[in-house]
Structures are given as C-alpha cells and as structure tokens.
Image 1 (cartoon, rainbow, N blue to C red):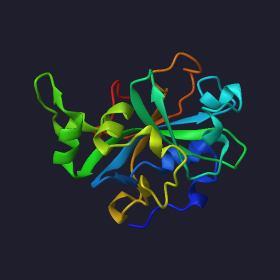
Image 2: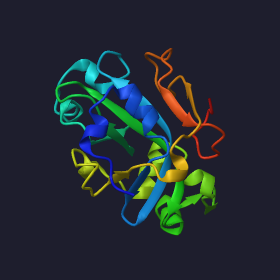
Image 3: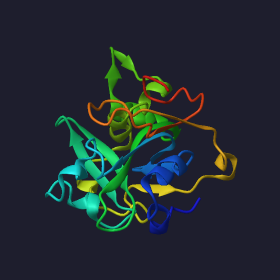
Image 4: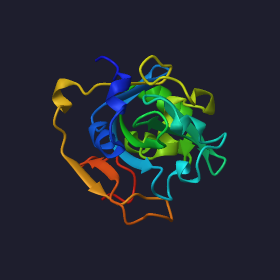
Amino acid sequence: MPTLPAEFYDRPVLEVARDLIGCTVEHGGVSGVIVETEAYHESEPACHAYVGRTPRTETLFGRPGRAYVYHSYGIHALLNAVCEAEGVGAAVLIRALAPLAGVERMRARRGLIGGRAAREGELCSGPGKLTQALGVRLAHNGSSLSSGPVRILARPREWLDPAVVAGPRVGISRATELRWRFCLAESPHVSLPRP
C-alpha cells in the first residue's frame, strides 16, 4: 500500500483521527494496523499546543504529515501525526495497533511481561507499548510520515470501511468530556479501558 500523503493530514484533526483507523504504521521491519487513536487540538487544555509554541511543541505547529514524538512521564516515546494547516497545533496520538508483521521482533523489543513473553494482544495495546514494539524513538520527532523512517500507509482494500466507535480520551485529567478517542469496534488490541 502507498504511504499517506501530507494532504491526508491537512484536514481537521477529528477527521484524520477517525480516518487513520485501519491504516498501517511500519518502522524497522515491523508493522501494525492502527486500531485506536486520540485527537488533540490547541483549543483544548489536554493538548501540548494549548500553551503555545515552545521548543517541545514546535513540531506540533509545523507542516502536516510529520511525526510528533515526545516522552510521556520521561519514560515512553509516544507517536503522533501532526494535522491541520501549518501554524495550527493539532495532532493524532496513535494509541494502539494490531500487530501485522515482525511479531517476534516486537516481542523481543517489548521484553518479558511478568516473567513471560508478551502475548500478541499485549504487544501494541497502548501508545508506549506500540512505540517500544516498533522501535520508535525521540529522534523520529519531526520526520515525515510519508517518506520515513516511520511511515503510515493507506488502508488496504479489506479495511476501507472499518466500524469505528468514539469515546472519551484516557490517561488525561483535562478536557475529559471530549469524545475524541476512536477505536476499531470489537478489536482485542485496543487499550484499556475499552469504549
């Protein structure tokens, strides 16, 4: 499948967040189908861009179709797709994937969980888990999601009309009433709590 062009991301962040469900993320010999996303926009306080331009948020205000990668609690790198017009702070957090290729490499990157290898449903069922499984790092911040090294591919034919459910975002304490989380209905790979 071809990678998504920058124009795909140059739209309202809520549209992009929904339309990324069923697309594929690939990096470092592994890939997975996006089954969960969350939208963030500078107009609401849960978004990093809400505070304006800072060295950390500069990528959020850049060209659409770029990766915004940051550390969450100083531990996990989280992968976002920058959206909307340049100058607007908006991005889609990639929250969960259904593993597609390179599952054993993903397991090796994730390490042991409770003394055992991760089950397939545990590999990418959260934003920190999926970046660890894919090998995504802070160094990928600002890179093109079309040309890589982290790339997002268009939906394959069998994913053209996925059943998507919306719910409130998780893991945040502000703007919790917004139903800006999008998940593939019935997917076992969606992070907890499931909508």
